[in-house]
Image 1 (tube, one colour):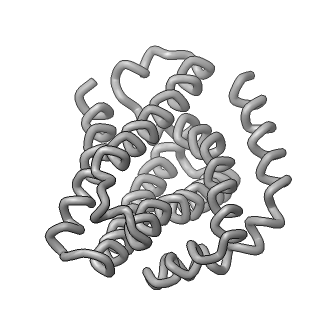
Image 2 (cartoon, helix red, strand yellow):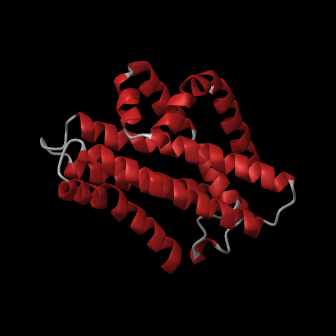
Length: 206
């Protein structure tokens, strides 16, 4: 019941923002192809604000997809009912976002507080939107074709890994445009690899 209510709410929100999404969609795709497009997107106040707004709106549908196909499925959630699992999934994702924000604030210094650092930090919003849309499309199409949930889950995990790898590449390129490769690698470890590693470990050992 809760899942259906949240799915309806997320659908209404996304329909409300559909025009904004259509307007910036070409820019989102371009950001996947070339790292400089992220700089161009960030330079547009309207497009960047629309992107940020849509990224926030994608949180709920993303969590619903994750919960529905059990993309995050640690042992402690095995005995949970659907409603509780949905709430816990949303809570864990928000905690993950909180860790990312905390790490970003921790490593934010005068040296990495410039344009390239801001662009690198916010390009995650772009790739998160793309990932959410692709997962929703994948889940919808494969479910319509009556594909087994296990196969859908595997496909979604591989898609997520591929998009995340591309995101790491683009983020590294943006960092390198403003600092050395070694510094960019350290930032990447602190801002991406550490929080995501914690999330992955929690799914495996808890």
